[in-house]
Image 1: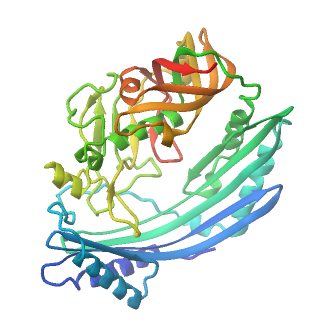
Image 2: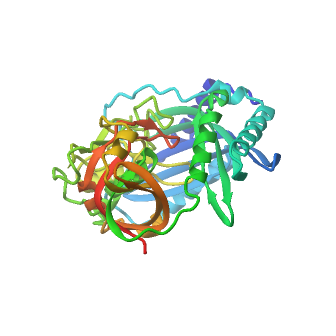
Image 3: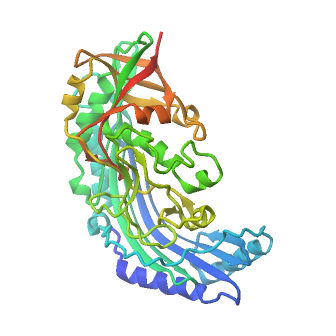
Length: 455
């Protein structure tokens, strides 16, 4: 059991960040990010604990800018002598860096932050024995409900807490704290010589609120429903993506809408703001202010207040995401979309994607499809998507949909199109909105006339 005075930790970190920032020399801009925290990871197999790790850590990342040259250094300690060396290293790195007119720290822009409470006393108060018990209980349950599930490849419990502070010579000062926990399992289902792997997970801020029953039900269903899967004949079909896979696809899209890719000419959506890039049924927003989500946050990685950023509204491209660097370079401004840790410089990224839901349930979506494929998983996403051209060709498995009903399981399928075409061919957004363990809020998507290659 860990006792943490989060308020005191925040004050101490901010004071330390300020003291380092205040050592800026004339003509220097300095930004200091400090963090400390602790995590627990329990993995079980065969009713025994396979590994138990409890680890604490701390770190710092320091940026120094002089005359357009930027230097960065990080360390894994908050000891004064280590921080001194890190500041010196950042200065040295700036001295030898190439000047870049767009370099600079974020400046306050007047947006008021939304209050986000990400702390959890329950995570800190839960004993290690209880965490082990949760993992063992989950494994026992998932291997007890269906005789075809003989084992679980990985079953785990994990949690963590952190406190962070940022201070810069531009007047940005931010402190934040958070804690969360999660469980997951990957059961193996066997029928003859065939094996299928399922998965299930849940996350939250209270270990005792994690829904083991739902995780077991979903994991076992995913492991068993594809037993007997075959390779289907090639055809063009309507595909149905459940909220998790819809969020995966739209996460790829959001990456193409990041300002760093746009200014380098590496996005298929560059220069298309104001154009119809998706079907009118799609509205997608990056909104870290949604406090219902585990991923909600009050500030981005440069200390600017988070705000909703509509990306696609009724199918029309509304904007790109920017940190302060890409905002300046593009002639616009930061959208408070900087993501970073103490070990890295800020980069641009979506923080909490939210899809505006439609009206019909998942079951109603299925009944509306005459000749389709319910995709239950993608494979090869990293190699099968060209983020510059938008070409999309990935492996998939799932269940065929025939005359409004789920039917035969299939595997070794290739789904091919382009991201641009997939967005325009969205037929319907489901009303089955859910908050995912990733923090994103998504719904099922129905996409028409997609090439599905098999035999």
